[in-house]
Amino acid sequence: MHPDFPYQLYLVISEESCVHFPLLQVAEMAIEGGVDIIQLREKNLDTSTFIKKAETLKKITDKYRIPLIINDNLDVAKAVNSFGIHVGNNDIPPTEIQQKWDKNKAIGYSIEYLEQLENDQTKVANHLGISPIYSTATKTDTVTEWGIKGIKKIRALTPKPLVAIGRMDAENASRVIKAGADCIAVVSAICASEDPKKAAEKIKSQIQQNQHENL
View 1 (tube, one colour):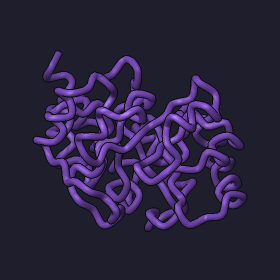
View 2: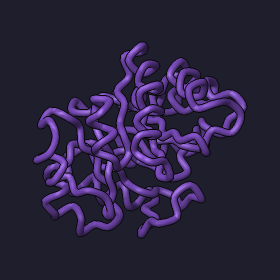
View 3: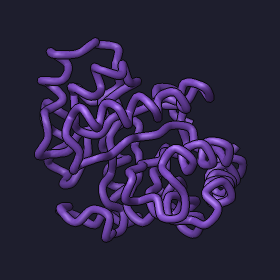
């Protein structure tokens, strides 16, 4: 567990990713199953609707003392006083977020090619999203499919917390942690599951099993 980012299972949730239950129900079931941190990702909502949705989700995350990250919308992150924000290459840059928001807030930044590890945005970011490990239908605008070799490469180049995303599930979570990721980010394996709690439990146990082996 990374001392600067002590979260192992990271849920990325949106209304459209929730197949069998409403978003708030999926979030609560996932937390009960072991999710440590949640990111709300709503690309197609206007800001006021996004804020309302974030406020309702934050009531649940606050109840369980789970940090809430807002995807790529600083106005929403500020309005709900979220734990942090996550941005990619084409979003508001971390350097700008740092100037406009509380310095203690967590900034996640997606790494899509190795050269990014040298830029100012990575230096400012608190944790890095390695996106995607395996290509996925959820996110189609990505550059590199990193795979296990990619995680190892990035791990060798930075001490920052690494969050792996892209077709993560109970089958590959352990491998990805072994390769150097600190945290597994999941969308479909939990949100599209008929039992989100059980799905989260399975992935969490794979992550923890790997950590016990390394003790």
